[in-house]
Amino acid sequence: MADTQFSGIWRKENWIQFKLYDDPSIERNWKGHLNWYHTMLRSLRPIIENEQDILISFFTVYGPQHYDAFERVIAEKSLPNPPDRNVRFIKLRIFPLLGRREQVRGSLEERFDACRGLWDYETLREYDVTEDLGNRYGRNENGTVDHDRTLRFMKYWDAGCRYILSVIAESGTWQNNVDVWGIPHLINNALGGWLRVPNGKCDCGGDLCIGTSYFQNATPVTMSVTSVPLFLTGCSSCDRMTLRSINI
Image (tube, rainbow, N blue to C red; front, top):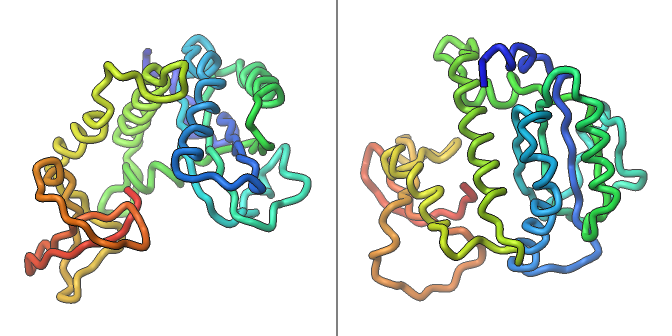
């Protein structure tokens, strides 16, 4: 795809953003949550994979967590009655081909309305990709945003999402012939096997990093934990190692 197709990518009104909610009244264990997520992705796959209409697509799953009403000010469709309990939801951001925005939005909303298992959804009329991804992945040391670097990250994330859609089996799980562990593992190794913890500081003031490449051959240890996932962290200054619960 030529980069001229992305000329309007920095204008937040050229994006469409959706929030797709699971039923907050249903109690699910971790496998139930995963099954629901895969079911939603399989339902969306025929539309999202259409590169004739959609240039960039991102999806991520959140929760269970408290309903956040912050984005209701930019909602074209919002929940009529915000839930008073924790919710699980998918954020779907779409950058359609210019001139195809309304058609893409209509096609997705039709799919949402017909999707079994989707409790409700919100449609947001914009997505500020510079504020969100630019500041996280393209910001220079002087505070400015490098658009070329940000676009590289967007193409990387879009490719990852499209790949994930392609390896979800019709049964709702991962295809058995795919090395699912290797999908994040290769990127972790390319980064060096240690990931800097956001806002993580050791008592000595050094940066904390999560070890991601040492567990397959580690000696099994049985312990009682109150939260997962649990990762080994190391201090970049004093080399002290600790266990830390954090979601990467």
